[in-house]
Image (tube, rainbow, N blue to C red):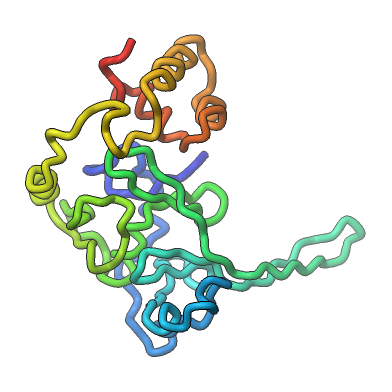
Length: 231
């Protein structure tokens, strides 16, 4: 069973695993502020290494880190498992930058997988690490309206009313629907076919794999959250 971590007021079907997150954010230390591990692209750009700040992901300390530029990485680790001959097998895993996946929401929020079964919104990780726990009744605001921009300067905890105000200010309530929307990941023809496959009982995960989209895209179609006017 996949665990989705998010504020239920904003994305209700993602509320599952808040319990794994601590009640307070870790203190910023000199060591935490340094970028000691970087992928190959970072090595080619020293200015990025020097300016990007990394902190442990709350609840996953020693395993994952998130940066103030909205990137998430795994850390080097050693895993010991029992071998078939009764001994201990040691596997060394090298840290890497994680590749995010679009959530399928209208704002195209990004999701990363923190190990098996833990799908987490990147914007939530940034705020938890650099700002602190989500206050009661608050949700994440992307100040420029771009759900894929998870730079710390673009994120803030806010109320649902403030989030709706942002959307009104940015003109999102009048955004074209369907494939005419610039954030659409499916064509109308694809959405119609997905609806047909859902009616005949195909699994959402299989449909998502067939069309190359996140399972949440298909889930929203099945629930009528998106493409509801299609038959």
